[in-house]
Image (tube, rainbow, N blue to C red; front, top):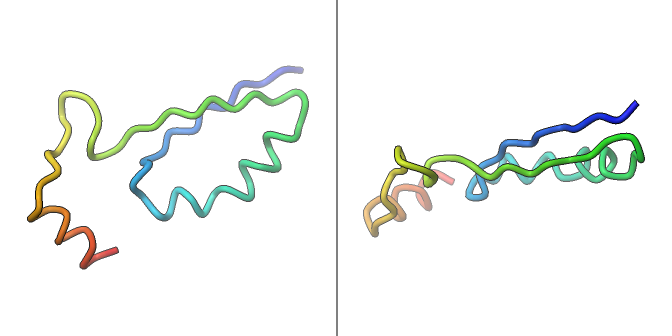
Length: 62
């Protein structure tokens, strides 16, 4: 059986990188194909603009 797993993640989210060990294991399974789909606060029409104020807020809360 072949399976495609779509992994939606925010490239600016530290928590998303926490899934790396599991993604590595899944990637080693021949019947599973991972499709990485970056998304998040800074994508598409609803994106939040990155400016100095928001960058400072993000650093303070990261």
